[in-house]
Amino acid sequence: MEENKELVNLLRTVIKEELQPIHQRLGNLEQGQAELQTGQSRLEQGQKQLEQGQKRLQKDVDGIKKELREAWKDILKFDNRITALEKKAAP
Image 1 (cartoon, rainbow, N blue to C red):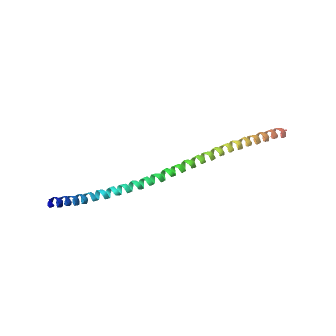
Image 2 (cartoon, helix red, strand yellow; image 1 turned 90 degrees about the horizontal axis):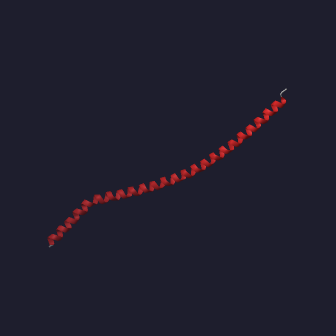
Image 3 (tube, rainbow, N blue to C red; image 1 turned 135 degrees about the vertical axis):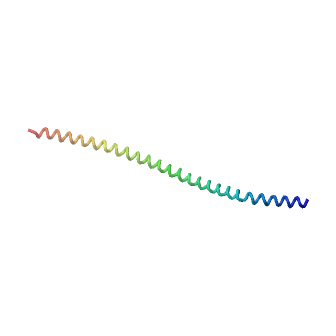
């Protein structure tokens, strides 16, 4: 009976020693996974910020296009006025 207890204890010790590197690798993998999840969260946050910035830029571009169209309309009006004045002034 005593021999069985010693054998069981010896077997437990051997199994613990054999499993120790596996437990350590598993811990390292879990830590790496946690770091990857943190990095992914930061990337997702950055992507959201970029998308918001893109929307603001598109709004600005649309505003600039509108202002440019209006400026060209004004230029055309001035050109028409100058042409009309030149016709009046020509002999």
